[in-house]
Image (cartoon, rainbow, N blue to C red; front, side, top):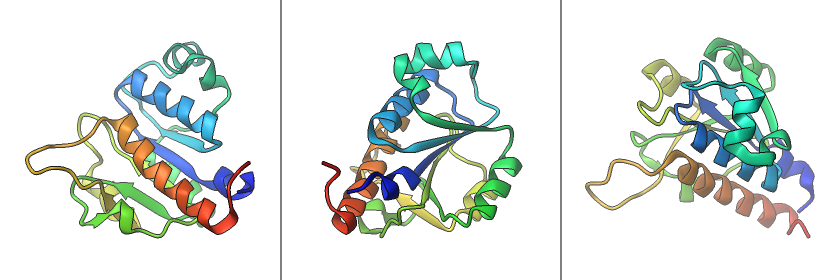
Length: 163
């Protein structure tokens, strides 16, 4: 796969609560060539020093864009004509049965509360990670890795492996 299609895939974090998860996601995104959008306010210090501590040296390598608010992010997303794909425990469709595109934005909610209804309603598609009955949810970084991994797998089927 050429880097072009994968580099257009983006991960958006809606008001993340836990710096360690954000750091892990930044590290994964840097290693896989994905962009990351953080929609503020975050539940922790978003200074470059704090992000470096959470994401090790990978935070500086990540293609990170910070959006000061949901409205600012939404204006950017709409002007870029990208699909907004929300991961949610309230969704009906499995991420494994979804056809990703190379310019999708995969949106993930807060660890403590997900996303509010107005954000849920704006998403063009809502995807679920199927789990065993009685379990609430997976860790944010793991959820992000599962869904991003499937999107990358699909892009490789279209364009071939990176190497």
